[in-house]
Length: 214
Image (cartoon, rainbow, N blue to C red):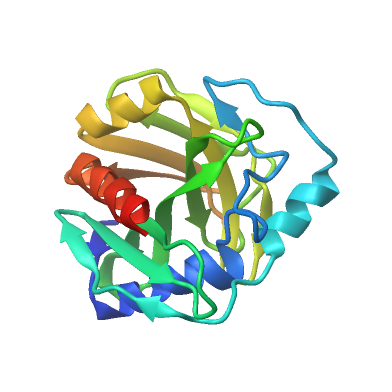
């Protein structure tokens, strides 16, 4: 079954839905949830309840939204909280099953603070409800090594995997062509979807610049 990348106006709205109601990456202080799997980087673990609370937290009231910017297959969206505060941005890409049969995969990237209060890049991958969680998810960049990561939880918008990549992994994504994401659907069939990395590097750089300007 063929899939397609969708970056239309509806996806712009959906992007902030993901960043808010079910794809909030951290608590209000914008820190890494404690039990997020970390790829190629070690962090201290904490009780799962803390991370569950962080992941399920609700976004603040909508504020001032910048016009979206497209970088090939990725979209950058930014919002400044209505009550003031630092601008928050994310880049994302949503893949749809062919013939509008629903969302196959959503990939979001966001900057958060680690335990040392340094900015790190967190990637959230969202698969449809009904995904079989026990097998986890497998990712790889181009023909690189496959990495398996567990699911964090499922919320009304989908089932979530969060990862923190170190600089080496981020450089591979910037230079790569495809991020392959594999998961097991509710019908027991394996799905492997190719997430295009075209425009990912410029989108990530633009996100960092936008947040630095506030």
